[in-house]
Length: 216
Image 1: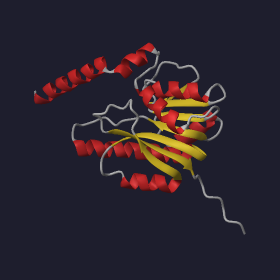
Image 2 (image 1 turned 90 degrees about the vertical axis):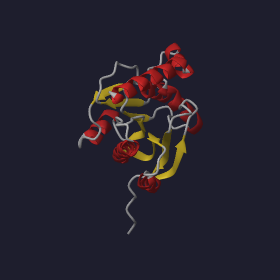
Image 3 (image 1 turned 45 degrees about the vertical axis):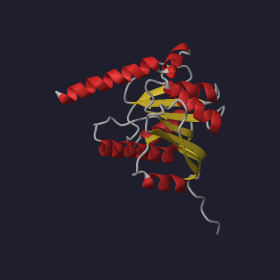
Image 4 (image 1 turned 45 degrees about the horizontal axis):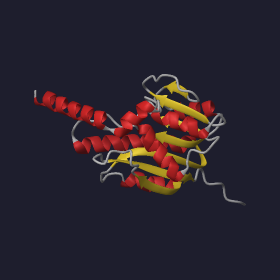
């Protein structure tokens, strides 16, 4: 019974935040799928990773807010492929595939859909929570690690990886691996991310790719 009451209270608090959230209202006015669109917009305004003509993969894309922003910014010469286990309504400039990105054949399927390697892999995914803080944090980190491994398999040299993480103490191995494979790795917290949220984003740029063979 206690659990049910907790859920009811958390649902009420979530609804209250949504109703009072200026980003939610703005997203509705501008025809955007989610308030999360503003997070990507802010990050890209500062770091310029979504260049015209770029090939983009959006992992866990539903309901499509990030894909909308990506399609607009890469333009008609770019490509955006959105992936999710859930179906999403069609979006202009976005090719959607309902699949599990952890499937063995997923990287090759995605590169085929893009007609080549990706320039950026996006992930605004969050693991389902249990309410146990440490367990939830480990699940979140595990999901980001899988997304990072996918990115390594599909990115072109010089490419970028942007993923949602949460503040906590167990992502040291993830950061070390990203710093090995990318030129720059930084934490980013856009203004559109609620101030009371532990949510952060990892932005890794300058993917090193496979090292070229030594001469001779």
